[in-house]
Length: 167
Image: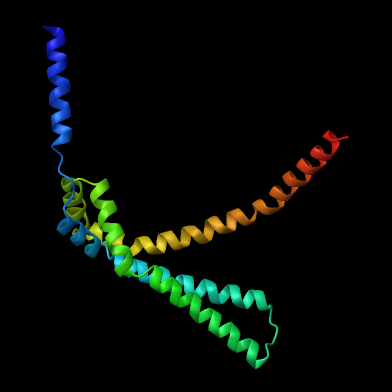
C-alpha cells in the first residue's frame, strides 16, 4: 500500500509537470513588445557602430590618411556596418527569440512576466535595465583591466617555469 501511494504521487507530479503548457506565440510576441526587445536590439547595433568607429580611430592613432586610403576605410566601415545591421536585424532575430522563449518558458510563466512588466516596477526595469547593464560593463571592464599586469606576471612565471623544466 505504501509503495502504491508513492507511485500515485510520482504519477500525479509527472502529469502536473507535463500539463504545463508551453508559451504560445502571441503571448511571447506581447512579452517581446512590452519589454521593448526590438528597441534593445537596435540600441545594441548603435553601440556596435560606436565601438567600430572607436576601434578604427584607435588603430589609426591619429595618422592622416591619403584620400584613397580614407575612401577605402570608409568603404570597409560601411560594409561592416551593413553586414552587422543585416545579420542582427529584428526581422532575422525575432523568429529566434520566439522559438527560444517558447522552448524555455511555459505559458503561465510568460503571463506572469507580462503581468509584472505591465506594473510601474516592471516598466522601471524595462527602462532602466539597459543603463544598469551598460554601467556594469564599464565597471567590469575597468576591474578587468587591472588584471592585465597580474596575468602578464603569471604568464612570465609560467614561461620561466616551463624553460626551467626543459633543462
